[in-house]
Length: 368
Ligand code: FNR
Image (cartoon, rainbow, N blue to C red; front, side, top):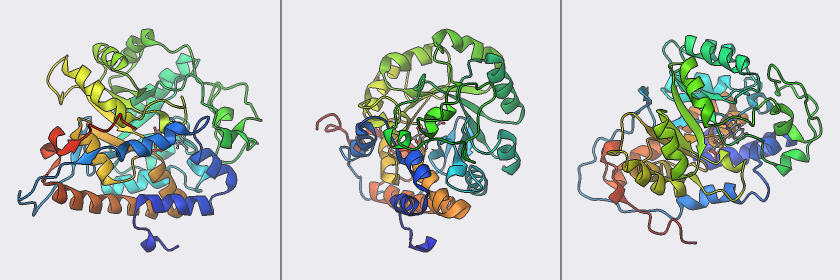
């Protein structure tokens, strides 16, 4: 369908499913094992209800924010999704260009199809970018990569910590990997498994020995903000805080890692409660992001009201460029802008700082 018939982020998914080659659709849409967590990511948002306030003069509303010190036109960033060229010849550049034009922040994946420098070269001057890091068994490779990113102006490093081994995405595994154009192999990677889907074929360089003991080393090689992506428990949230990091992402990797892990939204209240034992919340020096299943401004507003700093979207934007390239991504931003404007008005909040915990009823979040 023409792009002007797309009216919400779900629509991009239906188009992507129809237009993508089966292998790309399998890699993008799949989640691990029985795909319970991926369904739960969406379902959890439906167990939180709004408590809208009235008569608050919502003539003008503002949903812009600051994420890790960087201006963002939306309280949403583009989360890292690997292998953009499986879905579109311009791959991740679709996201970079759209993000630069609209003041949105993109998290660049280690396993992007386009090279890191190609992506940086497609950015407009001063465009804020974050980097997602898979840590290589060869730490010299990781060190070079991180320091190069910092030199090129990347503002924050999101170390993925929920993937010491890639989950079994069975839809993807049923497709054999045979060196597709989109699948770039990382430096230092030796044993490419050809028979277990795209995900496993490209991920064998990831170091499963990564541990809390490595955190000081990361701190010593970069001055970028360091955020752990893939935290699920208050215990680990406090370890990250006490290690002096700048934030965490409550994420289950879009349901692609440990199946029947809880959704980020469900993990948010106990984690915010734990962090409040260390000081007032929100804390300007520590951010809590969530991702997984976010497709509507209402999803984002719920997470923000419950204490999240901002929210990541993976597949929503991925399906937008897989279907319509850069224009699709720009359209997805426009859709979100319109949803934020309307829903902030209906909720009685003129800006994001007026979103307070009492504007949601999360009492049913854990009951189902
Ligand atoms: C991902 N995600 C991901 N995360 C990461 O840290 N490194 C990566 O290389 C990838 N690659 C990747 C590929 C694809 C196809 C998907 C769908 C996801 C996870 C991603 O950053 C994010 O956590 C989820 O996508 C969020 O869930 P939604 O928005 O896709 O529901």
